[in-house]
Length: 625
Image (cartoon, rainbow, N blue to C red; front, top):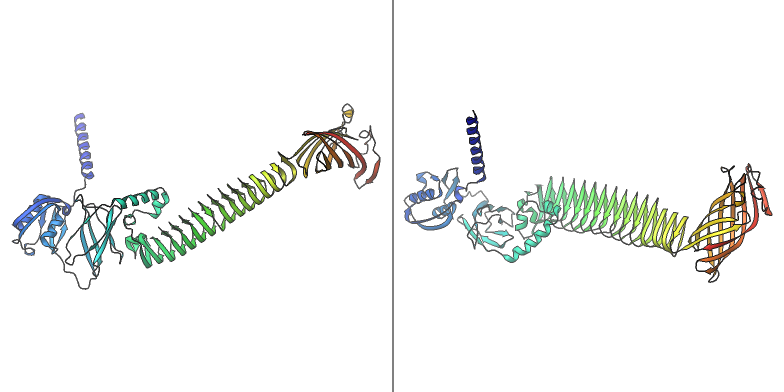
């Protein structure tokens, strides 16, 4: 049993090896087998027998078809069977190849009704004598074309009126050949062109670097690489690429008008192109392009593009783009782009760009950019950017940035920034910022927000808290007629600063009621001389006590005083205050607050549920920084 299994396994392995070895080898077609043979006044019958023996097959023909007694004298060195037969029969016989034999039949006379003929032949390398594959043979008038097979053989149907066709390949010189009148097999020899090969090779390498271009703009059609000619037609109709009136050369043709049932492919279009699903251009396109799904242009586009899904242009776009999904421009885009989701421009965007989600420019963006979510430009941007969430400019920006959440200008910004949360300018802001938080390294204008932060400002930041690193900073220890221990911080610029303050009555710390206060205010400091400044402050302070922390109990002050700058980081402040003490009527016992000093009241007024007392007071303090 074990021996039987071993023999079966051996037979299986041998059978598998034979299968793969035979399937890996593709037998040479009978007509392409090459032989070296000479005939010296031999009969046709004998010559055919020798050819068949040398090439390993047999001939099948009707004896009445041939003159078997006709004498042949010829010498062939590594010629294909097809070439030898063409020499012997001079085009009067046709050959039909079968697995092990070749059938010879009489050539059919060309019908007068037919308006075409078939050109056959070989394209051979002049230096090596070998057949050349993937050489394009084409008729530049009717745009029919053919490619040589691996043996250099080709067949091409052309109009009877055609007297010449062209041959093209990136490595060889373009050649025009005249067609024989007798239908004989052509043997065309081409010379290798080093300069042309080098130039085309460089171009191909550049194209390969761009994945989408090599896959979409240059599909697997050797004619696109072989043929340098630019061909022109007034009209193209295609079902799908390369199936239409321009045949396999459609990628080398510039059309005035192109109508594509499903999709079209061409070198360019000059007037109008309509595609049921898509349109693809290797080069430039202009005026009108409409597609159910997408338009692709490998060069410049001038005019209007409309696509159900997307428009993508490799070079500059001038005009209007409308797409249900996206507009993608790999160089520059000018004028108007409207997309349901995204507008993407790789270099420079000008004009109006509107999208449901975002506009992205990997370079400079000019004009109006409206994004449902964001606008992003890696370099300069302006003059207007509107977005539901965010605007970003990686370089200098100008004009207006308005966003629901965030505006970012990584460098200078000239104009306005308005955001629901944050405005950010990496360098100098010349203009204004309005938002919850505003940041700019230098401000030459204004900031209006809850928090403003900057390194230096030549304008006025206005907010609940403004931090100017090279601006106005003062820490003050002061005393007034009621609270003789106070600490406050002033921050901003001299024209407008914020005041954060706390105070206390230390003598009440050990009593039943302890008084302390916290408050906020703003003010301005006007320069009177090199060392004297006039302060005008307005503050509001909530007075707190252990028993009544929840009620209105506010001491408001309007302060007018002078600041004597004795040294760079030290000054003495003194001035008068107009005080307004506003309390709930429920707070009737204030005697402990005024236990040490009861100011002379200017007025006292009682409202429905509040009481207001006013008096003149004073303050003296020491300021640092």
